[in-house]
Length: 193
View 1 (cartoon, helix red, strand yellow):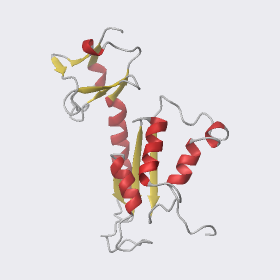
View 2 (tube, rainbow, N blue to C red):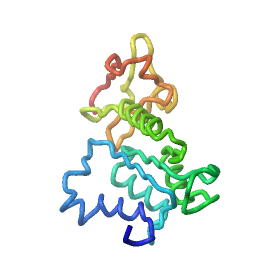
View 3 (cartoon, rainbow, N blue to C red):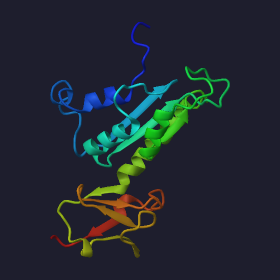
């Protein structure tokens, strides 16, 4: 193809989500109540000038708080059957951004692309189910989350729940399994501030 040999991911993503583009051609795309999924498919590292992986993640966090996912499909340097523009070298910038975002990374050459996409969809679904927007600001001391006779412990990001005050969202712990506990049976109670 014709074009720059510099492969950039961070800069165009941030450009698409900030002014002037977000106020013109991308107006309405970045919605406060919607989850933002970013999928990068590549055989090389990000080469965006002037933006570090840390700055990229800080920008995403500023734009979407915790309501985003970062998924990388990249050429694994350990896979000798996988053609890459960086043979034997890990794409460090993408790997760091993925790590900082608690994202996922998949080998684009393993021939299981559909499994990776399915895994991504399951993770995003799980993340969306675990975040419950509250209709009003609660008195935190009265906030409870129960399922039948089970009361989930407060301030427990693994087996209970945490509260994200800026987003006014209750976030269920990573061990709360919606395959066992349907989210429709969850009861959240609180008094209003």
